[in-house]
Length: 278
Image 1 (cartoon, one colour):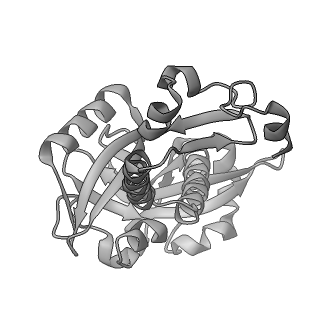
Image 2 (cartoon, one colour):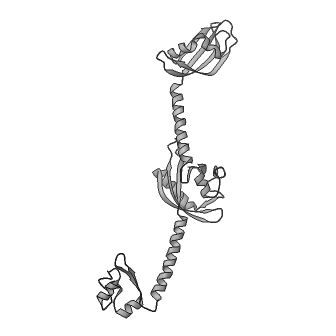
Image 3 (cartoon, helix red, strand yellow):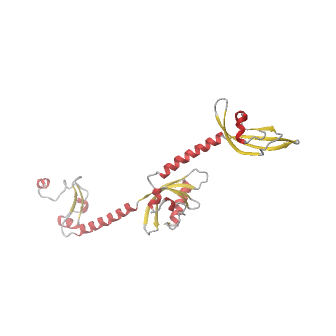
């Protein structure tokens, strides 16, 4: 060692020697040295078999029985570095998949109700950029929930570990109401507090269904109020779907006699051949 810097340890063939003895302590005598302390000196060492090991060296001057020594300790961090590399690769894969999901997705803390991260699809669904949406509280100025509904969702998620198609109605900053189906799962990150969640927005579908119901209601109201006999027939199946009240009054049948039956077998035409031709 005697006065040489840490980067010059290679000149002594020290790394190869240290790699052979593993985690150990080495004591050198040193009459004079300018080197007082070495901390976190990282280097790679090659064993006789050719294996590359990751080592960290620490060195410091000490005095034993009035004589100066230089104490060096070596830590083998090969497994730790490999674990860190594996973790980094795993996180890279997760991040890549998360940010490129074709559906809205976010990471949330269920204890603090804080948004940890969201992908672009999630933020765009509410009219914001990812940076604008991140780090906001789930209860924020942007999205409002009924507290009772959210409490039920979080309790179910916490106790069961996951939820699927959980209904949740939210109000956005522009005053609109969104009908969502939430799917989420707790992440095994050691905290027991982080979840990944996604949702399907069924607002447009529910609106269309309501409008269709209103339209059908108007049609049926008009159909049943017609002053002339009327019947709805399905020619693809031969089924008589419905008849109005005037139809029953004129021909003397009950609704049970006609609705659901095959109109080709039970019809009001006196001339069956003529009816078939029609």
